[in-house]
Length: 372
Image (cartoon, rainbow, N blue to C red; front, top):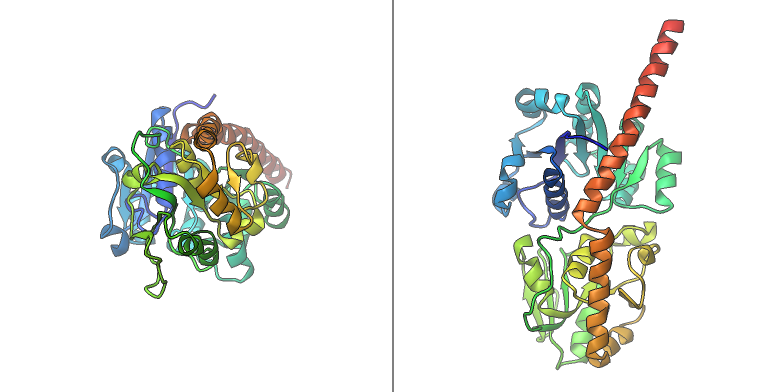
């Protein structure tokens, strides 16, 4: 089994979750790695947006390192990053492709690209609009850790030569758990505004709120346009820091999960919100996408909605014992398979497998060089 490792993560932002879904994933994974005895540092480009909206928990403050740009990163932190056992570059890092050029030359340890936006990254690469990764860099990373699994991994391998492995999002089980609070809302939704998700939110929540005036609904998340007409029985919450997520989930009878179009097309792309809500024992109503049944059993651990009328029926008429049983079953599944500790152990296995492959590659190159 992997011993103590020195990890260097370069990601979008650890210190702010405002409009940044990456933060909760990194925080959960870093905590799990620390609990398992590893040394962890996180390097973040110092940007005013995240600096002005900080919500970094105190227990992770010592992991954070800031830099102003690529030159600053190399000059201030280059030696430590190069010496790390594992260097992980995340998606959407500012100037990420230039950072990758440097990392792939300088790092002595295993290099990994952690794609928290895999289908989006692939679409941007096809359109020539990805500034945080170039197609030819993919094969140079020792590991390509993907938020998306399933058949998409074969596409990454065949088209780009990626050594692709799934590293799904997860929940920090120490932060999310049921509570005895009474329900304030019949249905709630937590998510940053997205153009492609908005029609789903309209169908599966806003129109239902209008159809059921006696129901209680809530939408939490930033960046929603002022032009949206919110029904009177929809409580609007601009932003919820991760520390308030649990209280929000446990104030709902049901929670709604909606998936971006690129993720639906790729399948096997669970949202961290799925695992957070399930860990809180809150029954989940989700849109349908390929592979969702590999994470939760439909009808037993999750409800899959194809039409709004189904959702309204569940909200109004589901017997309370069944509602509670759904939430309890989902929580058991998450605790058994989808916590941050599970992901940390999975990452350790990938690293263990990558080490001998790296040695073989070096040996083969040496033989070829000597023969030449």
